[in-house]
Image 1 (spheres, one colour):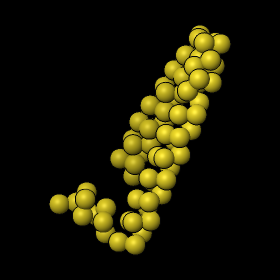
Image 2 (cartoon, helix red, strand yellow; image 1 turned 30 degrees about the horizontal axis):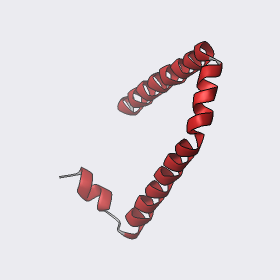
Image 3 (cartoon, helix red, strand yellow; image 1 turned 90 degrees about the vertical axis):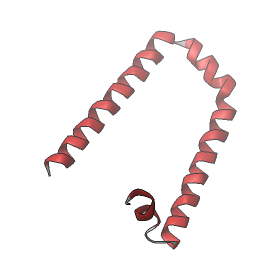
Image 4 (cartoon, helix red, strand yellow; image 1 turned 45 degrees about the vertical axis):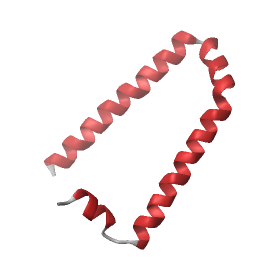
Length: 75
């Protein structure tokens, strides 16, 4: 139980620092980051959609082959 709480604490702290740094970056750069996102928006959408499809395919494969993650992770 303690290791699960420690893992959650580490996750919460790192995600909090990540969100805080993104907010700080967005607040300090202002319009410049908006222009960059507008320019690269299409490619960001293509990359994120490809990643979502890839994760979905891996989940479908893992659900049809139970134990595939066990063989990958456990010796």
